Image 1: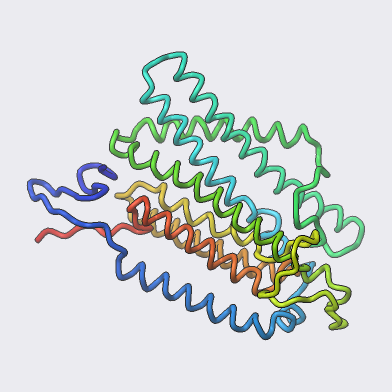
Image 2: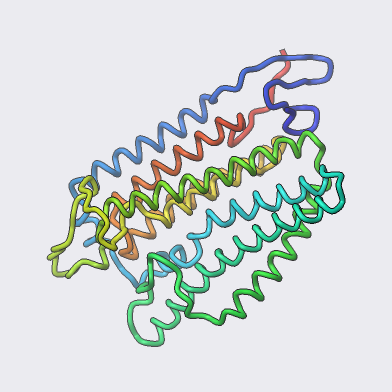
Length: 333
């Protein structure tokens, strides 16, 4: 399967009249980045094993602007990936299905899925935003919010109105963008889209099940923080069972790292955009994790384990697709 134009193919590539075969392999640069991030994660988990409470005592601040920004707007990585995947599938169907009735039904179905993801995205963003504004009015720390599920504290008409407008505009942009793609490009993108939906599902299921099994109290749920009591604290390796608490691992951090998957949607010949999106995805993962510790919603070990698991899942998905986060142009021999 060709990735883009006449330069890259899924399993081999052509340059002019020179046919060269290649087997997809992880590049040396990718190995270095992955091993570097894993090493950083291992070090972070080692520190957290002994100093989880100390780190929280030192950095927790529910009035942190940094913490609040990422609490409000970094929890949408899963929805963004699924929305993008649904749009790609929708316009792939529109382009490939010949039966008119079936084409309209299937395309509309995927647009509805994209709309549903936009509704979910806005539910999280609006819920946290309105909670923050209400907290400011009440004179309490603005980061005190429902950290386990979005609550309806905003006008529902606002969410639906924004979802309709955003989905309509973005659908037009996606249709225009994908209309210019070659058949080979579309064959690549449909694989990325399907694997992307599966990746989000696995990540959400994995993190969600672990949250229930571990039953770990969040830092802000402790009896005291500044008083150093931490009477409900348990180390990250201790499973408490289902008890209504779900600090470990961090769901926000998972969503932050899922932004990295967007790099795989970038055209395979656009090396510059691939680099930018990869850097953006890694930055979102790391910064979201740090923000959760800062705002007192998670322990360092919560965000570290979530980062390691989600990062490895995304990397495995890229190997399944046989796509590098940043492609290297083949050289002539």
